[in-house]
Image (tube, rainbow, N blue to C red):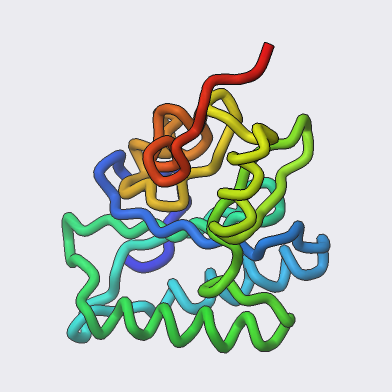
Length: 169
């Protein structure tokens, strides 16, 4: 148990997705990866190590997965992860816990904005049901692998939350 390669996590492993809101520099990315791996190597629930891993996608999305087959995360262990991420963010001036929670593709560029801004973009038609969005609520590693993390907005919670229309011709 303990730290494991991300690819070794089973599909049913629980997943948390966080964003920095902007791309991390290579130095920030390396620092985050090392610190998160260090944390996960000793992460425990009620004194029992958790089998967990991390992955950074697109230099901005921090993913943490845990295989709950042996031991599932407890409220206290999740609180410990939250405290760790808060402190880690302070070290590099990145807020993984209060970053913009609407991330989408604008061509090849990934943009992250707050809900009010995303709603305004939807009202203007700048984003619509075909816009590719990142679903930070994807619950499992298997759903991440199946493509549920990055998909068209019309197939996600974005569609109802922002009443997304069809793209303009």
